[in-house]
Length: 121
Image (cartoon, helix red, strand yellow):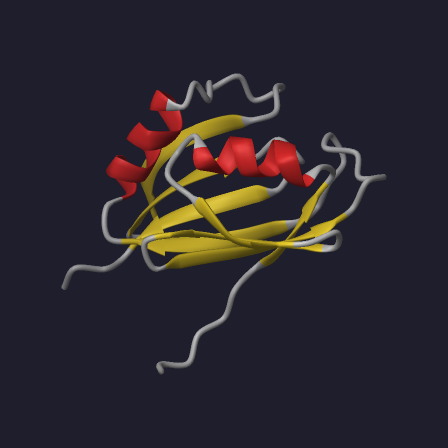
């Protein structure tokens, strides 16, 4: 097996987190009272229960490296995630920044998920 890391992200409610992430292609591979693991292709996200989290002040974040950022954001948009920066969830569509195509999705718990397109050079 290849070495890899998985982000550990907060969830105020595992059922809500499962519903939200499933809406754009993740599926649950493990859940108990304290831990949730969801997978979409080669991306694995792990969640810990954090019932007191305030989504408006959350400082949690992670980066997802993908081959096609536009496809990921199309999935976010198809799931009904809008672009209002004051709402949760929301997206900031991909742009070229420092030579990389990158966009942001802020999830229902206020976690900032950077989506960065893999370099195709």
